[in-house]
Length: 475
Image (cartoon, rainbow, N blue to C red):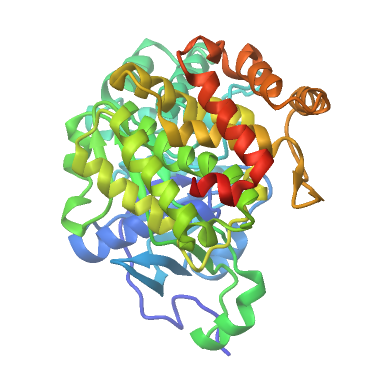
């Protein structure tokens, strides 16, 4: 059986216009797929040079396949469960700067280069004081990028049209701003001069982003079947869900250079990404967190099964549409579409998310993902969000550590576990509720100060403990 490469597959070649730091599963299933779609449907003509950001990686394997790999997208699409696959051909070559530092810097001499994309993990955008310009290469990703940009600045004499659009995908807040700040720090450390700093400031664009697609990665347990289905060997098969969202905060010029709209891609260009970040945290993450204790204590183990259950699924839908969405400031149709997409993602038959596995640190998750909706709902409506508070009562019951006579494998900060162990040892449900809601270490505020909140949570907690989740939820 043939191996996948450009001799065995009929694919296209593109102009190298993008340098990409990172060759892992997420970028290949997310950004590279979108580039592939724009190349195919909008004549984007954007080839990618993939750079291995650390000394261990997949560049050799990627080069062995001439940058090609097969992407499977599995999930709900237009209301139906769909699994589809395609060879992605936008990566033209890969470079390991630890083995070929001169080849790496030579990327900066390419006049066609326009974009930088990265995903070097949350720890990747970090300053390392030990990095030097003469290192080959620098240890940090920002150090490597600074050296590359300086090479480009020197090669083209600081020409304004040779600046770059930098679009990082690392999961940290204000990723573009942070990356730019560190690059300017290196420019000062390495005495690269005022003209270089001015070029960075005026002629390069650093975007902040929000990325969203579940990427399970390499389907090791399915590869025998997949290889037989494909008819060729591919060591870089990657799986992702159908849903995708890329929010890019930057000037209008960025949107003009990326033909996303003509391809129907869910790329949002904006001058303020915060409403989209808030939407994701409150609807997607907040729904997850609200669901976990309710579904688990109901007797369900998986996210998908929770949505398929009429009672639990109905509870979650009502919580999203009636109590979370009214706290957000985006247009109603956008919130409705995103919420329906979230529910489809939860129903994805190709992904099995165990409720217990996403219960880690549920107290802090409730504080950041759900409590803001609770407090905003009270502020806007002047009343209590009953379902989100029922979920809070379920969370307190969950930390009792028992389901149908079996121990729940709780995972949280030890201080949180010790707190609940002490409280539940009293056997007094109302005192457990009161002590939990008063715990400012959990919530950053005393929740008993909100009229009626303690009474609602206590009533629900007593119902859950005394009568069981199925009775309590139905009531």
